[in-house]
Image 1: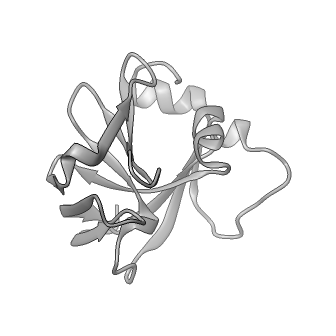
Image 2 (image 1 turned 120 degrees about the vertical axis):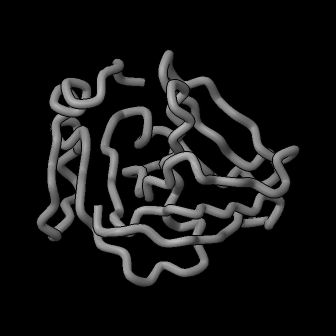
Length: 142
């Protein structure tokens, strides 16, 4: 991780506002099949830990995507908000939600072994297969 920042943002319609007190400055991408199906491409995120608050929580719908994680989205406009680990409440928040996207570095990719051939990123990143990710953090894929 390349440090943290306090970041704020919102969904497309403004029905959900987010404040992340310790958002990572390191952008990560997930290429798993569920993330790609969920958003039409890789899930680009900032790890925001547990220091995350929402305004407009009544507009947040949560999908229980696996035994160990859930995904949140705005029920009014459909904007993807977060991927949250159930065990510790850690939030991976969609990077595009944040108003200030300065001082960010694309540093990591997971499920690199399931990334389709039709796109590639040119940045040098720390790449992990799904098996390597689960060996490090535990759990099973969505």
